[in-house]
Length: 351
Image (tube, rainbow, N blue to C red; front, side, top):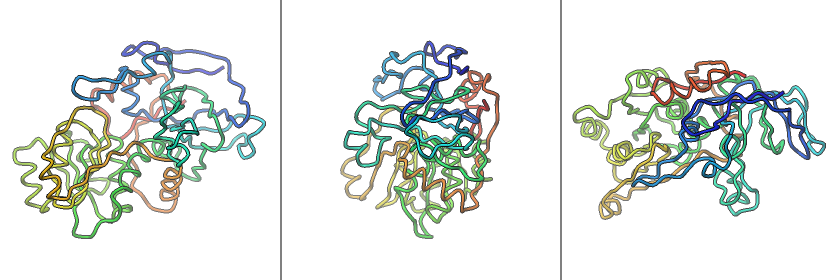
């Protein structure tokens, strides 16, 4: 039997459901879930909406039509069985699942950017049943990646948290030694970015977060400094100390976090905004142009980028993200802790 914890009604405790095990067809692969990270995106699925700012919302799970839905998109597991057209997936293999699956035919999908699919999206744990379960059905073996000797709990976080951080930092490229990098928000994704920053950009980041525990975790992961953006004169002090940062990544995605990151840029600076807390942003178009600033959005990452991240993690001594393990039956409690801001790093459910 397949056991899963599902969103049956937005904002209500997840419901334990049992179903017959699916039988994979074609190139499908059935995995026995080992680990599944609890991501902030799962909160949006659970709450039932994504905030677009200005009072506008996108209702999750295709306006609720997909409920009940099993969340969870940061998944490692072992292959149980595969469809007759799968040629590489073999029983017993431990694999990481790339969950950001698209329609396969729209222009972004054809360009290798299924995570930006403009058609019928099939993202696991978002539009199809995910990893808060004993088993998960993956639609094609191409979405399974070998994690080698990596810890399966840490590897699970790479499917979203790590991939999102990697793709955002990749947009910045290598920085000069005298450039400053600012990371706003030290949640699970932001801390993964701190762990990756030195290897990817060549500089240790300055981290801004409201929570002293998360600032402390950032310092342990190699941050150059960690500041409270609410402190009196915090932005002014940052500008004085750095002359303005050349690069910033906003992993919170609120009005205030965007404003802090944008306000910290020097001339020619680049802000990558990632977080989905929601809100709107305003800035002077004239000053934006005269200062030569750039603002980019970055949403998770591609299958190719996940392969690149795994290769980096397997060949570079990266500081590991703080992880708290919890049994699968603590899925609702884990979401509640994340919503209350009580999680440093990532909670990873063990099925």
